[in-house]
Length: 354
Image (cartoon, rainbow, N blue to C red):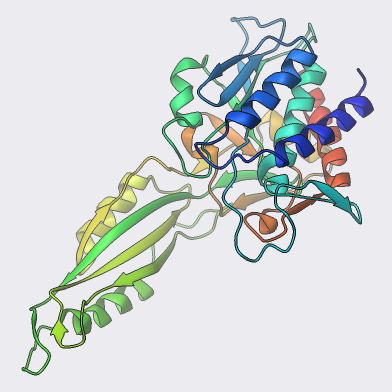
């Protein structure tokens, strides 16, 4: 099957995926649809939970491995939708439907690209295709949970909407729970240790705090107070105020370093929820990146998180669609973006796999 035929089939697969509800942890139907693609093309595959994965036909253990990965789970549609999120249809060149942009267009484009190269005998790398589940909630059975079963991965393309530009770095994430203490009391009595008033200085500290190391690709670490909660009734001064702190980490810090810094310096109690979602990167002179640059693609740093955070190898985020449409109402991807995405994936790999 030639590239044009594969592209048409990929768009049909995306329509099929959109029509199947596939919230995180509920991807059985889309996993089955992806299995059917592999069966139709006589491609050997495996499945663990709702992750579906396949190796190229002429796999050679002596060669390094390139991972192609994107996810088939979605978030739940928000209340601002005016269109049926599970009704895939094309209007003015836009394919509408939940998961069309994040990350269905990327997924079907990578599957088509993998299929294009599946029977190639002379490749510099093995190709491993993983259609993963539970990306949106970083679940137990996501790519991270699957990795121990997979062969060693040397480099990866993670399909997320980047307008087919080369995201050579991605910010990590650490979420902290903060507690500001005080003395509980009746509101009618004097209290010089009101936890809510104590929080004013703490909020100012977080607002003004900055990290020293700046990344060329990702800029500064970004710290944001995103939640605040305190009190139970109007006449009771609470004993504490609870805050949530969202920290987007550049590639100049590990998450562990960020946690140690803030715990030692913050004027309140801090506890991180986890340290697994580290930043990701790939060298700008990596052959995969150079292949994309040769085709006119530009490099940049991505502020959003993806399954790259699960990988320890160098990885490139790249895919059709626009990140700003992700999780939006009436989500869509342009049909021409998928067509161009498949063409560019194939050409980038042609330059890389020689």
